[in-house]
Length: 143
Image (cartoon, rainbow, N blue to C red; front, side, top):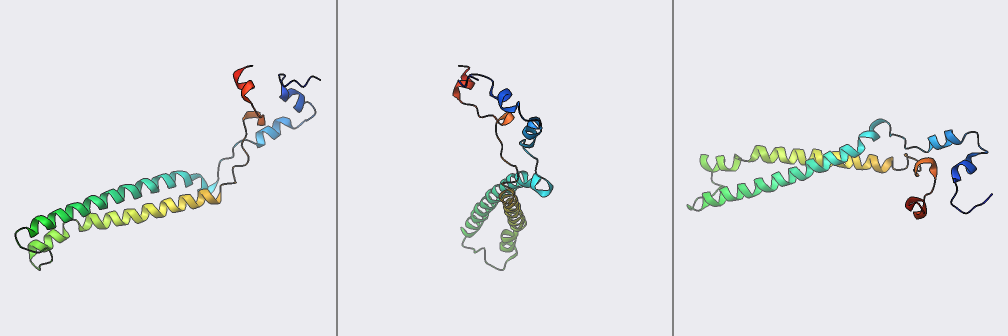
């Protein structure tokens, strides 16, 4: 048999095996089971929620600081016990609380997704090209 590397290597290698088709099927990528299948979407969603929450909190911080600065231009203080000062302090309180809650949820979701991905990192098995055949440049270039 000529082993020049140009022949069909799968027919010669699989001729003596009766379970060659079944072995190739076992090397396919197995889909994760249980919560592991939601790990990557949870990681992405958690990261997006956390980034959006941080952006929201930064915007709220700047708006709150701007309102306090404008209010204090007239010689008043935001820390006063007046109704107007209290109203300015409470203007963004709900949005700030919601931003912090969503930030915590996003970080927890991303952490859980990352932990599940790390925990199930070796469950997929060894993936190779289709048929388990190693392909070099000459095979791809058609030479």
